[in-house]
Length: 373
Image (tube, rainbow, N blue to C red; front, side):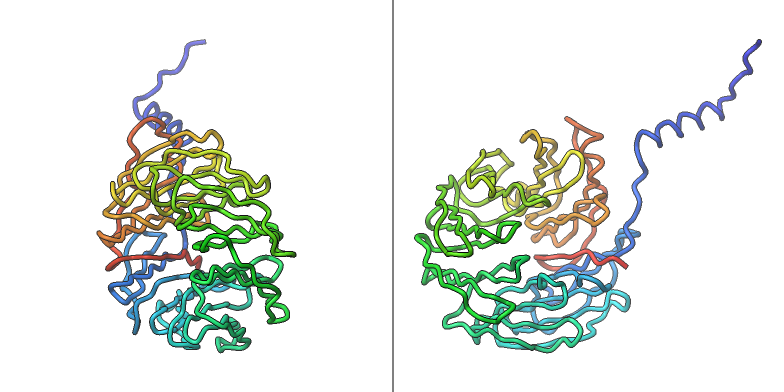
C-alpha cells in the first residue's frame, strides 16, 4: 500500500498538537487578588482571569492585612492604626461594612469554625470576636498588657504573646477564658500551633531559638537553638515541615515539628524573607530575596535548588493561587505584583525562569488574598 503524502499544514498542526499536549496552556483564575497597599491607603485589585489591574479601593487608614472570607466572595481587611476591620465585596469591588472595636490592632485571623474573625487589640488590650454574619463585636477577652501577636488552633484555642514580659497566654475560645500563662526562657517573637493543636511553637529573635511547648500543661518539650534570628514561619500544607527564615544566614532552617528536631539548613538566596510552600508535584518552597529582587525556589522533597526568578524591587510576600497554577509575589518597593507560573519551574529546569507577567498594584503592597468568584 502506498502511503498518502502529508501536507505541510497537517504536519504543522500535528506538531502544535504534540507541543500542546506536552506543555499545558496557561489559563486564568476566575477571581481577584486584593492587595493591601500600606503607603497608598488602598486595596489594589488584580483580575486574575485577565491578569489586569482594576481601580483601587480607597480606605481611611493604611491597611496591613487582607484575608479571604471563608465562604463568600469577600475580603477582610485590617487597618491596625485605626483599629478598623473592613469587609470588601469582591463582586462590587467596594467596602460593604466596617467595624471599629479599639484604637490600635495587632493582628487578625479567621476562627477555626470559619464563622468569625478574632482580632487582637493592643489598645485596649483584648482579643475580640467579630462574627462574619453580624460584623459587630460579640465576645471580648480582656488582657492585662498590650499583646504582640497570636495564633489559633483547630481545637478552638488561642495563643497570645506578650514579648517584653516573655509571656505566652493560652486561651480557650469556647469558654472565653484564660487557661494558663507560660513564661518563656527567651522573649517570644513568633507563635504557631502545631497542625494537631497539641503543641505550640514559639520562636525568639533575641534568643535565636525555637521552643516547643505542650499545650495541655504549658511545659517545655524542647528548646532548639537556631543559626539565625527567626522572622518568618512557613508550614507545608500537611503540617509536617516548618521553614524558618530570618537575619544572620542566607538560608532557611527546616524543622520537623512532630519529631521536635531541626532537620537541616538550606541555602535560599541572599537574605531570605517571606515564604510559601506548595502541595504540587514536586512540592516547592518559594522564598523571597528582597535585597536581590528575586525569588529562590527549592524542591522540598530533595532540598535542592529548583529555580531562581527575578521579580521586582524588594519582594517580601508571596502566595499561591487556589488552582496551584501561579505564585503571586508582592514587590514592596516597586509596587507591583509578579506572577510566576508554577508549571514553568518543572518545565525549565536549569534554565532561567521568565515571569508570566508583572502588574502595577499600588504603593508599598504588604499583604494579599485571592478571592474566588
